[in-house]
Image (cartoon, rainbow, N blue to C red):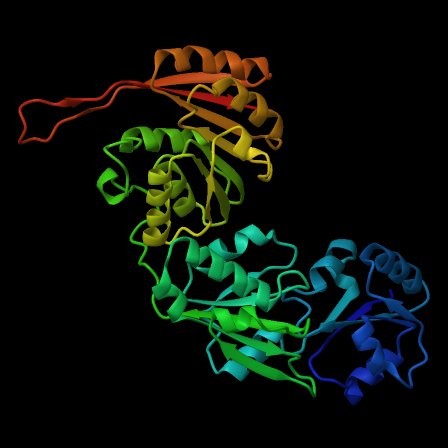
Length: 403
């Protein structure tokens, strides 16, 4: 049976063993950059992209002999090997790994890589960048032609400026390794402002380092007194816990918190699931400032403040997987009418009703949009052992609509 020789490349020229291996194959798959290494070899060259066309041509060539595929570094580390293994039986593959770009970058930067957080930004939405990076002390990034080092620095700078976190801005450093292993290899180092104004080769690795980040003591269970809020206007701890349970948040995706107030629901959601992108919609400047303070204090930069009123403020947001409505003013019906059609498949919407009118109308509005609806009413009573009288809070009805 013919096989695929998957060859990792970590230098500007092929060594003798690699050339001998390729010469025994009937065809070779290579990117434009790697094709320049194939001078003197006569095998047909298959471009590595588009991927599906490459896969089809490899299948055809395997009918007559072995096929070589050239890949950067270690093909099994954020490389082409995953795609090849999805289309061919593993028994057909022989993998020849080279040093990965990660290993080369860490060697140049002189940092151990076993303690790094590794993040690939290939194809990721730009809005996730700050939230993904800022929760970690040291992060190595795999970039692409959209999420370049300067763009990454710009997103980090804007996120930290939004919360006026000058200490984090001053303490954050970025290192960029361009064209690793090639003759024009170059290393750069600087602060956010410097890196954001530079341009870099498409082939690069980025290391983001922070001197200090807020310590995360737990991922869930903040107390009302821990969260910056106005005049006691905050979702009570017990109700917050029940509401998050009803939301059944995904690890990744998009969450809208409409009428966010202090952002307590958003804050707990962002801490629970750092891969979730949270949009907190709030119209009051005082509460917007509370949200900024909470993001800064709890390092939840996967939270994004949307200053405005729903449903108008929702129009430019990406489609959500979950929606929470904690405050709607007099706009509950139009908010639901706009939001439910935007829900991704399998999505949920949760409405917290303080007023009986909201508790009565929200299920009707949700059912009009063919959601499966259930309600639960929570009555919270608190009492410290040293107190004679308990504190009784108004009951809250939690309405859940599932698509």
